[in-house]
Amino acid sequence: MGKLILVPTPIGNLKDITFRAVTALSEADMILAEDTRKTGILLKHLKISKKITAHHKFNEHSTTPRILEQLKQGNVIALVTDAGTPGISDPGFFLVRACIEEGLDVECLPGPTAFVPALVVSGLPSDKFCFEGFLPVKKGRTKRLKELVTEERTLIFYESPFRILKFLQQLAEFLGPERKASVSRELSKIYEETLRGTLGELILIFETKKVKGEIVVVVEGAKREEPGR
View 1 (cartoon, one colour):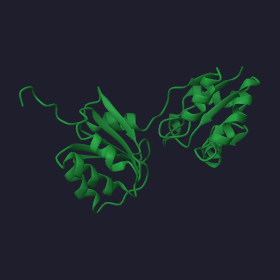
View 2 (cartoon, rainbow, N blue to C red; view 1 turned 180 degrees about the vertical axis):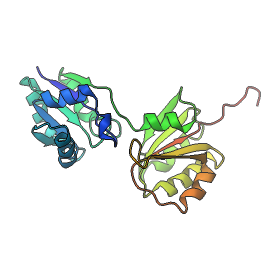
View 3 (tube, rainbow, N blue to C red; view 1 turned 90 degrees about the horizontal axis):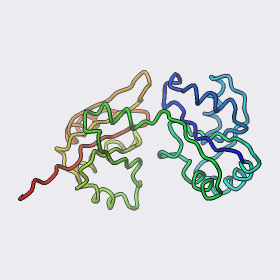
View 4 (spheres, helix red, strand yellow; view 1 turned 90 degrees about the vertical axis):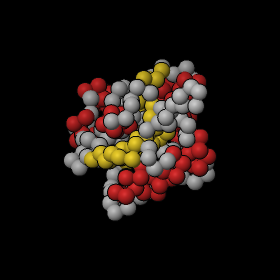
């Protein structure tokens, strides 16, 4: 039997690639990539010449059976996404579940994940947190925000730079404009930036500020109700 190895890749700075990740990519019989072009750039930087096969959310149902057969034949297959750890708001879960159901070996290397540095530099409690990733764009979005109103753990979201202002406004509407929060972008890159304040204060900033790059929003959890109140 072969093995599926989930290989985290840098979220921005290519120096964040680990030695184990380089070894796994170099020794794999096949590399599955969310975007073959982006992964090709990374492999070229690492001087690794390897066959890359597209595996993403639009084709994972059709490609997974063939991948399982390759694993059963003894091949070692590495899975990468555009950035970060596969399966964290990126393709990976469907294939991992299929491998487990077939009794195939799965390994995940430690490595970059955008929400961890964003949480740590937010200044908000990091001992307990609730990772929400990308909320539904339309259907189910309002319902989920209502469910999070009483969540006491620190909340973590991913959001597009094109929707960040509207998202902050929605958070303020449901959670209250006084909630503390932070907005991090371009993590590990030259123009890395984290802005902190209340949701109300951040809304004022982003009403006039245009940003690029993937964004992580960290929000203070609901205040715990004191006994007797």
